[in-house]
Amino acid sequence: MSKNLLAGLGLIAAALLLSACDSSSEAEEQAPPATVRIETIEARPLAISSELSGRIAAPRIAEVRARVAGVVLQRTFREGSDVKKGDVLFRIDPAPFKADLDSAEAALRKAEANAFQAKLQEQRYAQLIGDQAISGQDYDNARANARQTAADVAANKAAVERAQLNLGYATVTAPISGRIGRALVTEGALVGQNETTPLALIQQLNPIYADLTQSTRELNELRRAFRSGQLQEVGQDQVKVTLLQDDGSLYPLPGKLLFSDISVDPGTGQIILRSEFPNPDLDLLPGSFIRVRLQQATVQNGITVPQRAVQRDSAGIAQVLTVDEQMRVAQQPVQLGAVQNDRWIVTGGLKPGDRIVIEGLQHARPGEKVQIDDTPLPLAQTSGQ
View 1 (cartoon, rainbow, N blue to C red):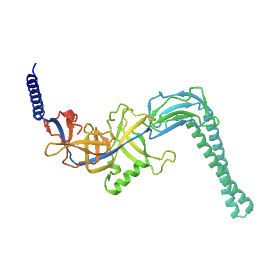
View 2 (cartoon, rainbow, N blue to C red):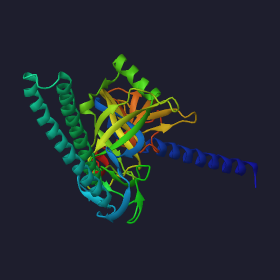
View 3 (tube, rainbow, N blue to C red):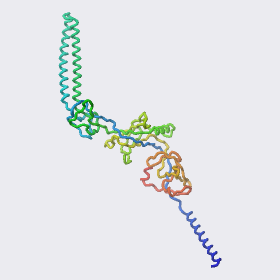
View 4 (cartoon, helix red, strand yellow):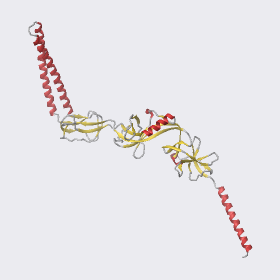
C-alpha cells in the first residue's frame, strides 16, 4: 500500500471523528433542561413549639388508712374500680368502740345528774344566804361545786364525741372520688395497732396532670428572644399543649398549661411545667413517661421549607437550591431552627419571594437552567405545607 493511500485513509478517519464530535456537541446543546418543582417562600405567622418530656401524675392521691385499731371484718369494694367520695371501703370490728361509746354515755348521764343536784343546792343556798341562815363559806362551796359538776358534764360530752368518732372510724370510707387500686390488707388483719395502717390507694385520673421538665438554658434563650423582639410570648391561657403518644400519634384531646414552677432543681438545672389533659377513657396512667409539644412563642414573619428541600455539603452546612428569574439554579446556605410538621423553620438565608427546588434536586445543577413543573401536587403532599 502506497504512502499516498495511507495518508488519504487517515484524512478520512479524522474527518469522520470530527463529524462525530460535532454531532455529540450538538446533541448536548439540544438536550432539554432538567424539570424541577419549586416552592415560593412566603412569610406567615408561625407558632414556635418546644417538645418536652415528662411524666403523668394524678391530681389527687389519697392513702386510705386505718384511724383506729381493730380487726378488718369486710372489704366492700372491687379492686381497680371507680369509687365516689364517702363510699364504704372497709369495715373494722365495731364492738369495742360501741362499748366505749356506751360507757361514755353512761358517764355523761351520771355527770349531768351530779350537775343537776349541785345546781339545786346552789339555788337553795342563794336563798339562805340572804336570810343569813348559812355562812358565806358554805354558799361559796355550793357555787364552786355547781361549776365543777358543769365542767364534768362538758368533759364527758367530749368523751362521748370521741367515742362516736372512733365508732365511725370503724367504717372506712373513701376520702376522694377516683380509681382505687388493690387492697393492701385482707379480712382478719389487725390494723391500726400503734400505727395508721395503709389499706388502699385512690387516685383521681380525670383530668390528669402531665409534669414536664425544661432546661433553664432553653428558657433563657426564649426570654432573650422575647426581649429582642424576635419572638412574641404567648399568654398562658392561649398556650396550645399537645401530647404525643407512644406510637408518635397525637393524643386526640388538647391540654392546657397550668403553671411554671418558680424554682430550679439544683441537681438537674431544670424547671417543672405542669399541664392538664382530659382523660375520660383513662388512657393516661400515673407514672407513664410522655412527650408533650408546648407552644411557647410566635413569630409574625416566619419562614419554613420542606425537609426534603434541604441538603448538606461535606462540611455539614445546610443549603437549598434556588431558581432565579433566568431559570438558573444556585446554591443558597440557610440557617435552620426546629422541625415543625415535616418542615424546617428557617432563621436565616431566605426571604419572601425566593423560589426553592423541592423536587428534582438530583437533576438540578448550580449554574444550569431548569424548567418548572407547575402541575398541582396531590393533596397528600400539599397538606404538610
